[in-house]
Amino acid sequence: MKKFIISIFVILISIPVFAQESEEEPTVTEGWKRSGKFTILFNQSAFSNWTAGGENTLSGTLGLNYDINYFSENITWDTKIIVSYGITKNQDEDQQKTDDRLEINSVVGKKASGYWYYSWFFNGKTQMDVGYDPDTDLEISHGFSPLYLQTGPGMLWKKSDNLKVNFAPATSKLVLVHSHFTEFGESFGVEQGKSTRYEFGVAIGAYYKLTLMENVTMENILNLYSNYIEDPQNVDLDYTMNLEMTINKYLSANLSFQTIYDDNAYQGFQIREVFGLGVNFGF
Image (tube, rainbow, N blue to C red; front, side, top):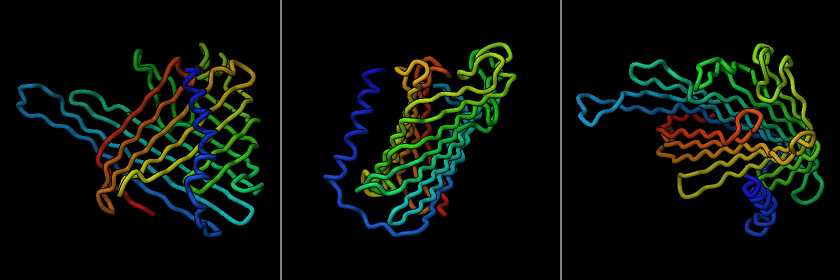
């Protein structure tokens, strides 16, 4: 884990240098720019008299990816809103949640020099529905519990809306859970009998969207956080990759991969992967 985190830091530090040498500065129009995409993702399998065996399965995911960007000679302000919710239904089984995410990332910056800005960022992420322990089927979370909030000053390196890295060495982090989840023990790092946990540390956020080939784009979102107060060597990691292969204006094949490491929530890597045919509505 330690070597992996060091490698991530090296990559982040090298992004500004590499991009500055390999790309020309893009032309950016001043003012507000808004864009978004609503996606309906389907997965389905069906069997009838199939001697090899199989189970009928139907699953779907609704997703929203919305960007609000502002740019002027001295100010930049980028906000991304990500919402997704998915369920799956196997034959003779109750439906289960496969995806549940609500996240807001916002960074405002004032021009310093070149591609560098003095910045202030905000990140909030939570879920919208009940979550159950896979081993005991007991309720361990529900809408807006847990709720993670981060904010703090830093320095933003921004080449374009599609390539940016924010360093925030004085970040405040707040974890909120409903009190009934800590009634008998700790929950998501919040101590028994409490409903909040405060941390102070360093946060790094990186965003890189690129075109791999015609009609194939990849979006990469990486967030790292280290708590100065307790176990700073245990770096929290949240990485999401969205790969979109466009078929036409409304149809695409979509692959979403996310991995999370947060030792307060789970002692190991959490991994989520969703692939299917998507119906897209841009706005």
